[in-house]
Image 1 (cartoon, one colour):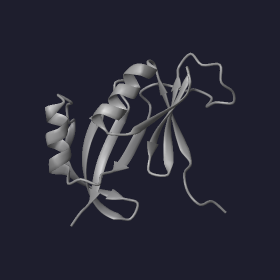
Image 2 (cartoon, rainbow, N blue to C red):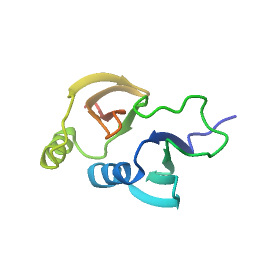
Image 3 (tube, helix red, strand yellow):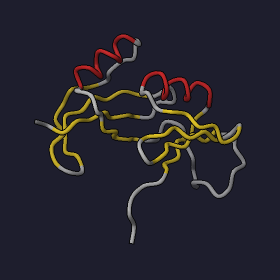
Image 4 (cartoon, rainbow, N blue to C red):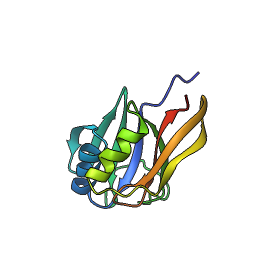
Length: 126
């Protein structure tokens, strides 16, 4: 019945700050929809940023910045990702550590976006 994920909404307190982080730090392409909604392209899906004070309906019952825990797959080896994050002065909270992904064992790094959302960057274990 379902074939995949089209977009995932991330509630943020500051659209410009979130766009800067997700484009500069994670390399996502930005597509502006309007003042309160921005899409960050991730392959064939979007991470959609919604501003906390939006009147957009319908929306989640309790949209809360910092409540997301999201695992993203990396094309690059995690050592390169870690060097990139260090060069940008972005703290790695944990990792690399072994975890279980949707398709088997993965190696992961954990960091937070400006609103405190937990982002896991992963690669399949070799």
